[in-house]
Image 1 (spheres, rainbow, N blue to C red):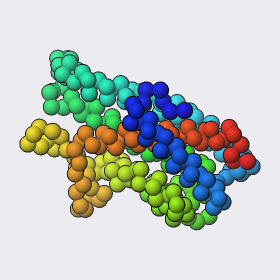
Image 2 (image 1 turned 60 degrees about the vertical axis):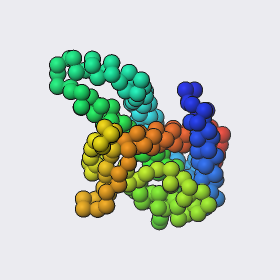
Image 3 (image 1 turned 60 degrees about the horizontal axis):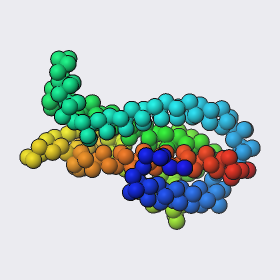
Image 4 (image 1 turned 45 degrees about the horizontal axis):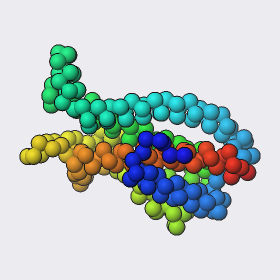
Length: 229
């Protein structure tokens, strides 16, 4: 089930993601790429699943904090700024928003890693193109190749370049003439700059969180229904 606090637009997006994820899993299964329950036991996947549950609990706690921060900065920005600046511990009017922005960037890294780890957990990774410890980009390239019907659409839901920029610290922010903030990033130093309003980046991050949450939810339901037998 989707989270109870989704907007109508988010509920629509969740439904689309749910259908896409189920179709992708069926395509992977048809291609023989999904482990069955016997293989889960043989590859110690049950232990890994238990560890993922512990990681998910920590992840869910961070998501709750991130949502609270997002709500605070969106609806109580002036009060929050005044409060933090008034503490006299180094916050200024210009840097208060960094606490929110940097946490949201770390959320993006976490959600993409959570997605990668769950997919690698269910995939047969003992032969090409799927291998253990693949990067997100390598994994998505393989999915797109092996699942030509639903793979390309699924892959486009994640901005791998942005994720890598956050992970490798290849981004910066600057203020525009209208006082709005834009985020710039590169996939490697010396490469082309990608530029987007910070508000648009936050939308990308929110959609990525929904995608990961949806995939984890679908996988849980599939496991309970005997899908992997």
